[in-house]
Length: 125
Image (tube, rainbow, N blue to C red; front, top):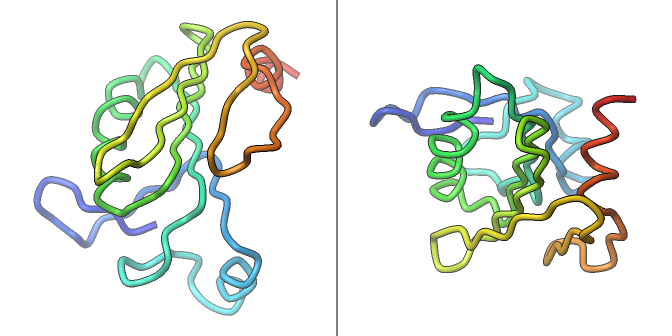
């Protein structure tokens, strides 16, 4: 996925999870699997935090993904045992954090029935 970094627009990010409309996903199978800046942004991007990526996942990617107008960005943090859902509102992300048995609330997937604990446990399984 093309992403602006340090004033450059020719860089890319490879998120841990990307959710795309089916048509867009199928189109990527016929070419280089890079979502260009002039294409529809992903519906959802999920990043899983590690010791080495904390600052990047919480700060750098959040601002980059806002510029790309990605409507929802999740930060799954097994270190702090928290799932942060960032929802794009007028160019900035509103942030809600979920822990333990709290049900994750997603405006992109309103019928989602997952707790933070379930998402965090998936990494351990």
